[in-house]
Image (cartoon, rainbow, N blue to C red; front, side, top):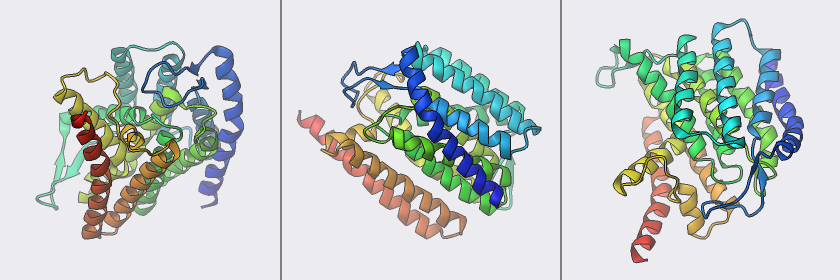
Length: 341
């Protein structure tokens, strides 16, 4: 157990030490987010490659406490380097959406090649039956990894939001990994938690640095891998729902954004101000209040996962219902305001 505690501590300290260095580097190379449209909620230029601090803290702790000879660990690190490189280029120069998707698929394919695969699930209608995906394993795995990677990226709209939501999701996945006896994914989850918490004081409002696509792509990628290895390979019916709940907020926000753009006949990749955090701001909440509200929703979803793992299904349904109500209110109020205008 001390190994896991020290891995968490080393990741946290490394991230806290590295972040000021990354701030200096970002300013030097011009990796700065300058507010230039009405979607931005900050008014001053902010360095935006903070994900480098999280990633290198992750690597340091992995190098000390994990088995680097493991093929799966090699695949995760290899794929993560691609994501970090992609995010870094995007933060500094900008990358076309189709190019980003291409490299995300490449990184996801690397994970698949090294054993991170969604290969089966329990039949909900017949709990004693395992449904093997066969040839569908590859597209399902790629869809999950690329999808989760982008949900974390899309929710990164307020100071401390994406890193906080990722941390809560990682805590939830750490609990599930511990419960299912998945020691390697427990270690990975704790390292992610530590690296995020070391970075969060610099990223929480008022932010001194953003994690940018560099951090969002890496965290989404890592969480997708952890959820596959720690949860999706468990032959239990709840394994289908655990990652959907643990990552429920970014999944909902992204799904809602896609549906909104389809209904409004807008390009799917076109940014807008319809995300949940924008709606909370429009209700009069300041950045901190909006972020804390979304933290609360994520924590409730995490509690739902804990209840589900302990076979308290009815309690899980109640918690999810509360979450649905908390999300429904800002969406309905802001929608009615738009109609009145």
